Length: 323
Length: 128
Image (cartoon, rainbow over all chains, first blue to last red):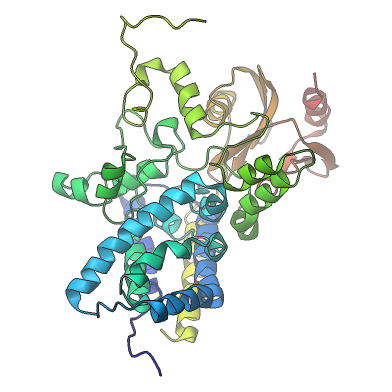
């Protein structure tokens, strides 16, 4: 029996809009002389990564879809496809996105896929399209399982996921400053997402939201963009290649080299695969907490400010620690 | 969307944007001075203390001596990339030197140097 439920592939239909918006942003920057930067090879790499992402979806998407359809067959629930159900699915899928994105920054296996999105030192609409080719290998499709088991049809879940990605396209820009206060309070915006792309110590591991910034506020990962700490885009250790193949696979190669070096325990090998990025068995690398701590050693005045709240502000009356 | 139309849009869009950016001068490499090279080094490695900087004659690379050892910073499009010179090899190259980093994400960089610079840089890149 064929399944009658079908939804359009929203991302594919948005391609003409993506191209038009990139041209509009570039013209805006040229005319106004502000609002962002473009560089030929950086943009070309981002666009090729975007095309590769669509291609990998066409080639490997069947794996996730087969998994979802299997879940759909075993679940006794079916919420239908009414407008309120689609809206509810959109909101819950955005919560799903928040956690997948957070895992993407805190689990190196998932970071290996997501890292390429952060590998540009630029932040413009082409950066939005610098997407992964290897998402299938992270197995993060399992995070969508609860939605399908709750009775949301797989086609609908994928459709709202596509809308989520389209929403996130326009926030990859420096051409828009701050939005109205009510909008900034609820929605993910260019300002919030600029902070997410920062390699500054303050902005590491913050603002994972897709559409609604409320998830970051609920789960304690929200850091507002600071006027006195301009966002420096890119990776803590920026890569030195525009080659899309190297961009797509460099962290996977890094995991392989780290986890297979001789003399490690099984626990250390697993940590190189699944611990937060920056783990090393010999302490030769820094993770984000260590980078923040080192920043505060250099800039103690930042202690307790946004992005550094987890480091207590010591009262001048506090007793000195014993050596 | 039919696959043929998607393909035309993607290929045409990418090519068109790349040509537009190149023709409007967005392919220029960053030019380093001793000050900007030092500033950029500290952007990449904020814990370091820069001792001195030697900039290549074309301004597209600089050798940086720091309290933690020597490093190389070079123009990467409009930006820069920097690496400490710890796990690396160098080779003679018709344009100067090729530095190989044994890193899949940053495999190598070619530094344009004239003959005088080349021998000076080789000396500076030797481990202390």
